[in-house]
Length: 427
Image (cartoon, rainbow, N blue to C red; front, side):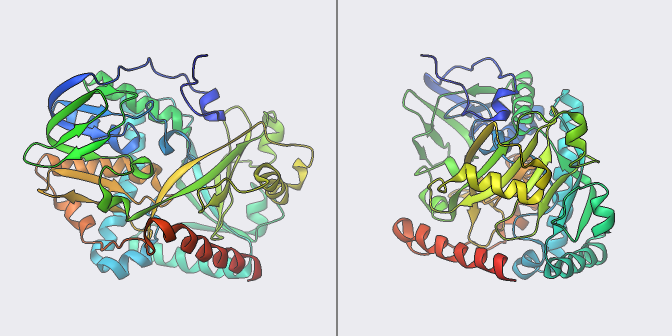
């Protein structure tokens, strides 16, 4: 039986995969070797190939197989930790620089779509919505912070105005960003892969990296080959295990889940979200949702911090969807899928260099990576080319290992997340 190229999902069912790329066989000498054919690795590969570097990408499965091809598809500014956390970690000036660069990450998606003709179902508009009065106060304070400190104005819609576009009784208002939006993540990843191939990047699929040898010329080893290079980039995020143990200790893989209804028809779909924006609430254990190009509702949430799929997941997701949209009481899910993302302990981006400084990495996107991952590829490519000023700022962020080591870090995090979920429920 032929194995499916991607884990089952609506994304995989609605995207045309690229022709299979060969596995690495034998030894290869090249300028830059990249582990991972997701957004980070492909973005870096495109930047470096355009600058004249020879580049090879080693992918354990297929292009876009991991989080890049299975995520929620919401394209938003900023980083997972939020602006206030970055101020505490870096100071106001560097935090402002990171914020501006995160907006560049959004713009980079548009530039790549246009230049390489990537059809990824882009839709403009995003709303952070409030369920409780506490959320209204928090969003109002955030709106003021973004306008005053970051020159990024957003518009507040009260409940009545919000319900004119988002037909749900659940929300008290929303913070609207017309510059952010949503896309089909696997189509975008495949578009980046096709762009990289067109620039001469060599992509080797079904070639998991088993070990890294650091040195003047780093080496990435697979079961059937070896790549020697001037610089290596580790861009596998949550799916890289054991290649660089010091990095592995600083991230935690977290399962996250998305479901898709059957096609609702354009009229019924637009009766849910009239302006086709993406939506996310502000609970710690949040719900996020949007419409697909074929008029489905895509509904995400229910993260798992235990490495186990939550019990009764389909039932829980269906119940939560109907709490948002009671008018879908007769609708279930046709697709339900998940995957692992990586979080850092402080939820801030963990990008930098190892050893001699010729092994680069990016991880710790903390559920906020669609735009930031493309930026990471660009920032690391700049550093490989000798301009490391932006990467230097990211390296100022101090990161710590998750407490408890491999044995205890998951149960400790599960206990912490249980507290935050209780907080969501009670106030």
